Length: 430
Image (tube, rainbow, N blue to C red; front, side, top):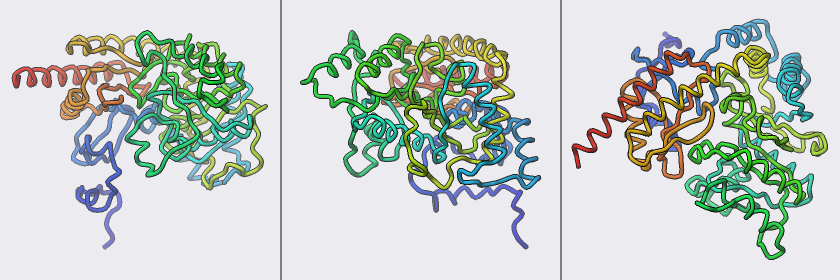
Protein backbone atom coordinates (compact mmCIF):
# COMPACT_ATOMS: atom_id res chain seq x y z
CA UNK A 1 0.00 0.00 0.00
CA UNK A 2 1.30 3.51 -0.71
CA UNK A 3 2.31 5.53 2.30
CA UNK A 4 -0.35 7.89 3.67
CA UNK A 5 1.07 11.25 2.65
CA UNK A 6 -0.88 13.08 5.36
CA UNK A 7 1.06 11.32 8.10
CA UNK A 8 4.27 13.14 9.01
CA UNK A 9 7.38 11.00 9.03
CA UNK A 10 9.34 10.56 12.24
CA UNK A 11 12.54 9.68 10.38
CA UNK A 12 14.63 12.80 10.96
CA UNK A 13 17.68 10.84 9.87
CA UNK A 14 16.75 11.55 6.27
CA UNK A 15 17.96 15.12 6.73
CA UNK A 16 21.47 14.18 7.83
CA UNK A 17 21.65 11.44 5.20
CA UNK A 18 20.42 13.44 2.23
CA UNK A 19 20.16 17.17 2.88
CA UNK A 20 23.14 19.37 2.07
CA UNK A 21 25.50 20.59 4.78
CA UNK A 22 24.40 24.10 3.75
CA UNK A 23 21.31 23.75 5.96
CA UNK A 24 21.44 26.17 8.87
CA UNK A 25 18.39 27.13 10.96
CA UNK A 26 17.45 23.50 11.57
CA UNK A 27 20.76 22.90 13.37
CA UNK A 28 19.72 25.12 16.26
CA UNK A 29 16.00 24.34 16.06
CA UNK A 30 15.98 20.52 16.04
CA UNK A 31 12.27 19.80 15.80
CA UNK A 32 10.31 18.04 13.07
CA UNK A 33 7.56 20.58 12.39
CA UNK A 34 4.22 19.46 11.01
CA UNK A 35 1.83 22.43 11.16
CA UNK A 36 1.55 26.07 12.15
CA UNK A 37 -1.02 28.79 12.63
CA UNK A 38 -0.69 32.40 13.67
CA UNK A 39 2.43 32.64 15.81
CA UNK A 40 2.53 28.98 16.88
CA UNK A 41 4.50 26.17 15.22
CA UNK A 42 3.64 22.56 16.08
CA UNK A 43 5.94 19.57 15.96
CA UNK A 44 5.07 16.12 14.68
CA UNK A 45 5.37 15.00 18.31
CA UNK A 46 2.63 17.40 19.40
CA UNK A 47 4.98 20.02 20.85
CA UNK A 48 4.21 23.72 20.41
CA UNK A 49 6.58 26.65 20.06
CA UNK A 50 5.91 30.37 19.93
CA UNK A 51 7.52 31.72 16.77
CA UNK A 52 9.78 34.76 17.21
CA UNK A 53 11.58 34.09 13.91
CA UNK A 54 8.71 34.30 11.40
CA UNK A 55 10.63 32.80 8.52
CA UNK A 56 13.28 35.50 9.02
CA UNK A 57 10.55 38.12 8.49
CA UNK A 58 8.90 36.24 5.62
CA UNK A 59 5.82 35.62 7.77
CA UNK A 60 5.07 39.09 9.09
CA UNK A 61 1.35 38.25 9.11
CA UNK A 62 1.84 34.88 10.81
CA UNK A 63 1.40 31.32 9.60
CA UNK A 64 -1.62 30.42 7.47
CA UNK A 65 -3.59 33.63 7.76
CA UNK A 66 -7.20 32.41 7.32
CA UNK A 67 -8.23 35.04 4.76
CA UNK A 68 -5.16 34.54 2.59
CA UNK A 69 -5.55 30.77 2.88
CA UNK A 70 -9.20 30.89 1.84
CA UNK A 71 -8.41 33.07 -1.18
CA UNK A 72 -5.61 30.76 -2.28
CA UNK A 73 -7.73 27.63 -1.88
CA UNK A 74 -10.52 29.23 -3.92
CA UNK A 75 -8.04 30.20 -6.62
CA UNK A 76 -6.58 26.70 -6.85
CA UNK A 77 -9.99 24.99 -6.64
CA UNK A 78 -11.23 27.19 -9.49
CA UNK A 79 -8.34 26.21 -11.78
CA UNK A 80 -6.78 29.64 -11.45
CA UNK A 81 -3.50 30.19 -13.25
CA UNK A 82 -0.68 28.45 -11.37
CA UNK A 83 2.24 29.68 -13.45
CA UNK A 84 2.21 32.52 -15.92
CA UNK A 85 5.78 33.65 -16.68
CA UNK A 86 5.17 37.40 -17.02
CA UNK A 87 1.90 37.07 -18.92
CA UNK A 88 -1.02 39.29 -18.02
CA UNK A 89 -3.22 37.50 -15.48
CA UNK A 90 -6.20 38.58 -13.42
CA UNK A 91 -4.30 37.78 -10.22
CA UNK A 92 -1.36 39.99 -11.18
CA UNK A 93 -3.71 42.81 -12.18
CA UNK A 94 -5.57 42.58 -8.87
CA UNK A 95 -2.32 42.66 -6.89
CA UNK A 96 -0.91 45.60 -8.81
CA UNK A 97 -4.16 47.51 -8.39
CA UNK A 98 -4.16 46.90 -4.64
CA UNK A 99 -0.48 47.83 -4.35
CA UNK A 100 -1.02 51.03 -6.32
CA UNK A 101 -4.17 52.01 -4.41
CA UNK A 102 -3.08 51.24 -0.84
CA UNK A 103 0.71 51.45 -0.89
CA UNK A 104 2.17 53.58 -3.68
CA UNK A 105 -0.46 56.27 -4.23
CA UNK A 106 -0.96 57.25 -0.55
CA UNK A 107 2.83 57.66 -0.23
CA UNK A 108 3.19 59.68 -3.39
CA UNK A 109 5.41 57.07 -5.03
CA UNK A 110 5.47 56.87 -8.82
CA UNK A 111 7.54 53.69 -8.98
CA UNK A 112 6.94 50.93 -11.47
CA UNK A 113 6.94 47.33 -10.26
CA UNK A 114 9.36 44.85 -11.75
CA UNK A 115 8.84 41.19 -10.84
CA UNK A 116 12.14 39.37 -10.60
CA UNK A 117 13.02 35.79 -9.73
CA UNK A 118 11.52 34.74 -6.39
CA UNK A 119 14.38 35.63 -4.03
CA UNK A 120 15.40 38.92 -2.46
CA UNK A 121 18.89 38.49 -3.87
CA UNK A 122 17.39 38.49 -7.37
CA UNK A 123 15.70 41.82 -6.70
CA UNK A 124 19.03 43.21 -5.48
CA UNK A 125 20.79 41.89 -8.58
CA UNK A 126 18.20 43.63 -10.76
CA UNK A 127 18.64 46.89 -8.84
CA UNK A 128 22.42 46.83 -9.26
CA UNK A 129 22.12 46.04 -12.98
CA UNK A 130 19.59 48.83 -13.55
CA UNK A 131 21.78 51.33 -11.71
CA UNK A 132 24.76 50.40 -13.86
CA UNK A 133 22.81 50.52 -17.11
CA UNK A 134 21.01 53.76 -16.22
CA UNK A 135 24.17 55.66 -15.21
CA UNK A 136 26.81 54.02 -17.39
CA UNK A 137 28.92 53.47 -14.28
CA UNK A 138 29.93 50.20 -12.65
CA UNK A 139 30.81 50.89 -9.01
CA UNK A 140 28.25 50.34 -6.24
CA UNK A 141 28.78 51.85 -2.79
CA UNK A 142 27.62 49.54 0.01
CA UNK A 143 28.13 49.56 3.76
CA UNK A 144 29.85 47.62 6.51
CA UNK A 145 27.68 44.82 7.96
CA UNK A 146 25.22 45.08 5.07
CA UNK A 147 23.57 41.88 3.86
CA UNK A 148 21.99 41.83 0.41
CA UNK A 149 22.04 38.16 -0.59
CA UNK A 150 24.47 35.45 -1.63
CA UNK A 151 24.26 35.41 -5.44
CA UNK A 152 27.43 36.80 -6.96
CA UNK A 153 26.37 40.41 -7.58
CA UNK A 154 24.48 40.79 -4.30
CA UNK A 155 27.25 38.95 -2.47
CA UNK A 156 29.77 41.57 -3.57
CA UNK A 157 27.69 44.12 -1.63
CA UNK A 158 27.33 41.85 1.42
CA UNK A 159 29.74 42.63 4.23
CA UNK A 160 29.88 39.26 5.95
CA UNK A 161 33.20 37.56 5.22
CA UNK A 162 31.87 34.07 5.88
CA UNK A 163 29.23 34.39 3.20
CA UNK A 164 31.56 36.10 0.74
CA UNK A 165 34.02 33.25 1.30
CA UNK A 166 31.42 30.86 -0.04
CA UNK A 167 31.78 32.40 -3.50
CA UNK A 168 35.09 30.65 -4.11
CA UNK A 169 36.33 33.62 -6.11
CA UNK A 170 36.83 37.34 -5.84
CA UNK A 171 33.69 39.48 -5.75
CA UNK A 172 33.92 42.76 -7.61
CA UNK A 173 32.24 46.03 -8.45
CA UNK A 174 31.54 47.29 -4.92
CA UNK A 175 33.22 49.82 -2.62
CA UNK A 176 32.38 49.36 1.05
CA UNK A 177 32.25 52.30 3.45
CA UNK A 178 31.32 52.65 7.16
CA UNK A 179 27.64 52.45 8.09
CA UNK A 180 26.02 54.93 10.47
CA UNK A 181 27.75 54.78 13.90
CA UNK A 182 30.09 52.05 12.68
CA UNK A 183 33.01 53.76 14.41
CA UNK A 184 32.65 55.94 17.47
CA UNK A 185 32.91 59.63 16.67
CA UNK A 186 32.94 59.07 12.89
CA UNK A 187 30.46 60.93 10.69
CA UNK A 188 30.15 58.18 8.06
CA UNK A 189 28.06 60.23 5.64
CA UNK A 190 30.50 63.15 5.75
CA UNK A 191 33.40 60.78 5.13
CA UNK A 192 31.65 59.26 2.11
CA UNK A 193 30.89 62.70 0.71
CA UNK A 194 34.48 63.82 1.21
CA UNK A 195 35.89 60.73 -0.51
CA UNK A 196 33.53 61.04 -3.47
CA UNK A 197 34.32 64.76 -3.79
CA UNK A 198 38.08 64.16 -3.77
CA UNK A 199 39.61 63.04 -7.07
CA UNK A 200 42.16 61.16 -4.97
CA UNK A 201 39.54 59.77 -2.58
CA UNK A 202 39.89 56.35 -4.14
CA UNK A 203 36.21 55.69 -4.85
CA UNK A 204 35.14 55.45 -8.48
CA UNK A 205 32.03 57.47 -9.29
CA UNK A 206 29.21 55.14 -8.22
CA UNK A 207 26.23 53.94 -10.17
CA UNK A 208 24.35 53.59 -6.88
CA UNK A 209 24.60 53.80 -3.13
CA UNK A 210 22.81 50.86 -1.50
CA UNK A 211 21.85 50.36 2.13
CA UNK A 212 19.34 48.87 4.56
CA UNK A 213 17.82 51.34 7.01
CA UNK A 214 18.02 48.52 9.58
CA UNK A 215 20.70 45.92 8.94
CA UNK A 216 18.89 42.69 9.74
CA UNK A 217 21.61 40.06 9.44
CA UNK A 218 24.30 42.60 10.30
CA UNK A 219 23.07 42.90 13.88
CA UNK A 220 20.02 45.20 13.80
CA UNK A 221 22.11 48.31 13.22
CA UNK A 222 19.53 51.06 12.70
CA UNK A 223 20.46 54.09 10.61
CA UNK A 224 19.23 57.44 11.80
CA UNK A 225 16.89 59.43 9.59
CA UNK A 226 19.60 62.10 9.39
CA UNK A 227 22.10 59.57 8.04
CA UNK A 228 19.68 58.22 5.43
CA UNK A 229 18.79 61.74 4.28
CA UNK A 230 22.48 62.63 4.07
CA UNK A 231 23.21 59.53 1.97
CA UNK A 232 20.26 60.32 -0.29
CA UNK A 233 21.60 63.85 -0.79
CA UNK A 234 25.12 62.52 -1.49
CA UNK A 235 23.77 60.10 -4.07
CA UNK A 236 21.85 62.86 -5.86
CA UNK A 237 24.77 65.31 -5.88
CA UNK A 238 27.20 62.71 -7.15
CA UNK A 239 24.93 61.32 -9.86
CA UNK A 240 24.27 57.96 -8.20
CA UNK A 241 20.97 56.15 -7.73
CA UNK A 242 19.73 55.47 -4.21
CA UNK A 243 18.88 51.82 -3.51
CA UNK A 244 17.10 51.18 -0.20
CA UNK A 245 16.96 47.44 0.38
CA UNK A 246 13.66 46.81 2.19
CA UNK A 247 13.66 43.05 1.86
CA UNK A 248 13.75 42.32 5.60
CA UNK A 249 12.88 45.73 7.06
CA UNK A 250 9.82 46.32 4.86
CA UNK A 251 6.18 45.16 4.93
CA UNK A 252 5.57 46.68 8.37
CA UNK A 253 8.57 45.24 10.19
CA UNK A 254 9.76 48.65 11.43
CA UNK A 255 6.21 49.91 12.06
CA UNK A 256 5.38 51.34 8.63
CA UNK A 257 4.99 49.51 5.34
CA UNK A 258 8.34 50.87 4.15
CA UNK A 259 11.19 51.29 6.61
CA UNK A 260 12.07 54.71 5.13
CA UNK A 261 8.59 56.27 5.15
CA UNK A 262 9.20 58.93 7.79
CA UNK A 263 12.76 59.75 6.71
CA UNK A 264 11.98 62.25 3.97
CA UNK A 265 13.62 60.31 1.15
CA UNK A 266 12.32 58.80 -2.09
CA UNK A 267 14.60 55.94 -3.22
CA UNK A 268 15.22 55.36 -6.90
CA UNK A 269 15.12 51.59 -6.42
CA UNK A 270 13.55 49.48 -3.66
CA UNK A 271 14.21 45.71 -3.62
CA UNK A 272 11.44 43.82 -1.79
CA UNK A 273 10.77 40.15 -1.01
CA UNK A 274 10.19 38.06 2.15
CA UNK A 275 6.72 39.16 3.39
CA UNK A 276 5.52 40.71 0.13
CA UNK A 277 3.44 37.58 -0.56
CA UNK A 278 1.97 37.76 2.93
CA UNK A 279 1.83 33.98 3.17
CA UNK A 280 5.43 32.82 3.04
CA UNK A 281 5.24 32.12 -0.68
CA UNK A 282 8.26 33.15 -2.79
CA UNK A 283 7.75 36.56 -4.37
CA UNK A 284 10.30 39.30 -5.00
CA UNK A 285 10.00 42.58 -6.80
CA UNK A 286 11.86 45.78 -7.47
CA UNK A 287 10.27 49.21 -7.29
CA UNK A 288 11.79 51.45 -9.98
CA UNK A 289 11.40 55.17 -10.62
CA UNK A 290 10.07 55.50 -14.20
CA UNK A 291 13.13 57.34 -15.49
CA UNK A 292 15.30 54.39 -14.51
CA UNK A 293 13.09 51.68 -15.97
CA UNK A 294 15.71 50.99 -18.62
CA UNK A 295 15.70 47.22 -19.16
CA UNK A 296 14.58 45.92 -22.53
CA UNK A 297 12.10 43.02 -22.71
CA UNK A 298 13.49 39.99 -20.83
CA UNK A 299 16.84 41.70 -20.28
CA UNK A 300 16.50 40.61 -16.66
CA UNK A 301 14.22 37.61 -16.51
CA UNK A 302 13.54 34.26 -14.89
CA UNK A 303 11.07 31.44 -15.37
CA UNK A 304 9.47 32.20 -12.01
CA UNK A 305 9.35 36.00 -12.21
CA UNK A 306 6.07 36.60 -10.46
CA UNK A 307 4.51 33.82 -8.38
CA UNK A 308 0.85 33.71 -9.40
CA UNK A 309 -0.28 32.04 -6.18
CA UNK A 310 1.66 34.67 -4.23
CA UNK A 311 -0.21 37.43 -6.09
CA UNK A 312 -3.44 36.05 -4.62
CA UNK A 313 -2.26 36.13 -1.01
CA UNK A 314 -0.31 39.38 -1.43
CA UNK A 315 -3.44 41.20 -2.56
CA UNK A 316 -5.33 39.97 0.49
CA UNK A 317 -2.48 41.02 2.79
CA UNK A 318 -2.50 44.55 1.43
CA UNK A 319 -6.28 44.96 1.53
CA UNK A 320 -6.56 43.39 4.98
CA UNK A 321 -3.72 45.17 6.77
CA UNK A 322 -2.86 48.34 4.82
CA UNK A 323 -6.14 49.77 3.52
CA UNK A 324 -6.34 52.03 6.60
CA UNK A 325 -4.19 53.02 9.60
CA UNK A 326 -5.59 50.53 12.14
CA UNK A 327 -2.85 47.92 11.71
CA UNK A 328 -0.15 50.57 11.85
CA UNK A 329 -1.55 51.76 15.18
CA UNK A 330 -1.42 48.20 16.54
CA UNK A 331 2.20 47.94 15.47
CA UNK A 332 3.12 51.05 17.45
CA UNK A 333 1.64 49.52 20.60
CA UNK A 334 3.44 46.23 20.07
CA UNK A 335 6.72 48.00 19.35
CA UNK A 336 6.46 49.69 22.76
CA UNK A 337 5.82 46.33 24.44
CA UNK A 338 8.81 44.75 22.67
CA UNK A 339 11.07 47.61 23.71
CA UNK A 340 9.98 47.35 27.33
CA UNK A 341 10.57 43.61 27.53
CA UNK A 342 13.92 43.78 25.74
CA UNK A 343 14.96 46.51 28.18
CA UNK A 344 14.37 43.92 30.91
CA UNK A 345 16.60 41.46 29.05
CA UNK A 346 19.38 44.02 28.58
CA UNK A 347 19.30 44.80 32.29
CA UNK A 348 20.24 41.19 33.07
CA UNK A 349 23.52 41.31 31.14
CA UNK A 350 26.23 43.85 32.05
CA UNK A 351 26.97 46.06 29.05
CA UNK A 352 24.05 44.75 26.97
CA UNK A 353 22.00 47.21 24.94
CA UNK A 354 18.99 47.38 22.63
CA UNK A 355 19.29 47.51 18.86
CA UNK A 356 16.96 47.91 15.89
CA UNK A 357 13.73 49.79 15.37
CA UNK A 358 9.98 49.13 15.51
CA UNK A 359 9.28 45.39 15.57
CA UNK A 360 12.76 44.56 14.29
CA UNK A 361 14.53 44.60 17.64
CA UNK A 362 17.07 42.75 19.68
CA UNK A 363 19.67 42.94 22.42
CA UNK A 364 23.42 42.87 21.91
CA UNK A 365 24.64 40.70 24.82
CA UNK A 366 28.28 41.07 23.83
CA UNK A 367 29.00 37.43 22.99
CA UNK A 368 27.86 35.03 20.31
CA UNK A 369 28.25 32.14 22.74
CA UNK A 370 25.99 33.83 25.29
CA UNK A 371 23.38 34.86 22.72
CA UNK A 372 23.37 31.34 21.29
CA UNK A 373 23.00 29.77 24.72
CA UNK A 374 20.05 32.04 25.54
CA UNK A 375 18.30 31.18 22.27
CA UNK A 376 18.95 27.46 22.77
CA UNK A 377 17.51 27.54 26.28
CA UNK A 378 14.52 29.58 25.05
CA UNK A 379 13.84 26.93 22.40
CA UNK A 380 13.82 24.28 25.11
CA UNK A 381 11.22 26.42 26.90
CA UNK A 382 8.98 26.67 23.84
CA UNK A 383 10.22 29.73 21.94
CA UNK A 384 11.81 29.89 18.50
CA UNK A 385 14.29 32.77 18.34
CA UNK A 386 17.60 33.36 16.59
CA UNK A 387 20.72 35.52 16.68
CA UNK A 388 22.31 37.98 14.27
CA UNK A 389 25.32 40.25 14.10
CA UNK A 390 28.92 40.03 13.00
CA UNK A 391 29.63 37.69 15.93
CA UNK A 392 26.04 36.39 16.32
CA UNK A 393 25.95 38.37 19.55
CA UNK A 394 22.47 39.87 19.10
CA UNK A 395 19.38 38.07 20.38
CA UNK A 396 16.99 39.00 17.59
CA UNK A 397 13.19 39.28 17.81
CA UNK A 398 11.23 38.92 14.55
CA UNK A 399 7.86 37.84 15.91
CA UNK A 400 4.96 37.94 13.43
CA UNK A 401 3.44 41.42 13.44
CA UNK A 402 0.05 39.86 14.09
CA UNK A 403 1.14 38.10 17.31
CA UNK A 404 -1.48 38.77 20.01
CA UNK A 405 -0.24 40.77 22.99
CA UNK A 406 -0.74 37.90 25.42
CA UNK A 407 1.33 35.59 23.21
CA UNK A 408 4.07 38.21 22.87
CA UNK A 409 4.12 38.45 26.65
CA UNK A 410 4.39 34.68 27.02
CA UNK A 411 7.21 34.59 24.51
CA UNK A 412 9.18 37.25 26.34
CA UNK A 413 8.57 35.49 29.66
CA UNK A 414 10.20 32.39 28.16
CA UNK A 415 13.09 34.46 26.78
CA UNK A 416 13.76 36.20 30.08
CA UNK A 417 13.57 32.95 32.04
CA UNK A 418 16.02 31.43 29.57
CA UNK A 419 18.43 34.33 30.01
CA UNK A 420 18.25 34.04 33.80
CA UNK A 421 18.91 30.29 33.65
CA UNK A 422 21.88 30.69 31.32
CA UNK A 423 23.38 33.53 33.33
CA UNK A 424 22.94 31.74 36.67
CA UNK A 425 24.61 28.63 35.24
CA UNK A 426 27.43 30.78 33.88
CA UNK A 427 27.96 32.48 37.22
CA UNK A 428 27.94 29.12 39.05
CA UNK A 429 30.54 27.76 36.66
CA UNK A 430 32.82 30.72 37.30
